[in-house]
Length: 271
Image 1: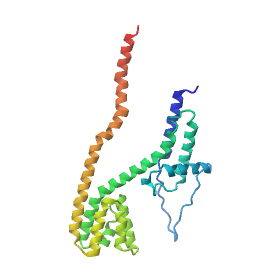
Image 2 (image 1 turned 135 degrees about the horizontal axis):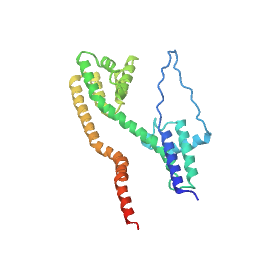
Image 3 (image 1 turned 90 degrees about the horizontal axis):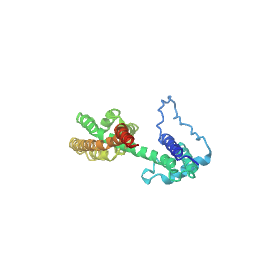
Image 4 (image 1 turned 120 degrees about the vertical axis):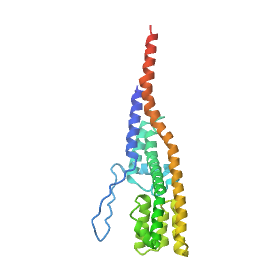
């Protein structure tokens, strides 16, 4: 007979291992030496049987939500191999614990998706937080007499984060001879909150409309959106703190206070 406790511990350990290897890892940035041609990394074949990778690719293709069908759902041999091995572990555990056997596969598929969604939320929150400052910088530089192209180029490297990266792409497009309308398209792809700013700059560039009142309206809306986002985060904080309270503090309180009282009461009732 197989000990149920040992089986449960083995399943929990397998789920933790799959969870640890299932999250996407950000590769370290390397400084490339100057060269006349770009150096492209040589693709590597993941170790292990090819059918494992093919099985993982099939599972990821059918299990990834349509909302993530894009860069996140692109071919990733490492993720395919992890998912394939998780599927093999789930099949091997099926005779031992049919109810808990899908846990490794579910962890391998769900954890990267949840990590991607969390990263999207962080990027959107960073854009909302940075946008009012970027609008103020554009208002200052254009009020000082700089045209929009020069203003975008001047502040491109200052904000940092996702909005700074979008400004850097827009400035690079202008630097290489592109038009401002296409450069503002790079800026607008940073997220829906940036669309009013890109529209105001494009309207000024196309029709010559006054830019200062438009940037003032965009700045007011951006600051109001950032304030609402901060208030929502503050309201979510008690609910977020409830999970560690329930999972750590409350069991420790029960173990240190209620369990000794129950043990003493049961000991006094024994003959």
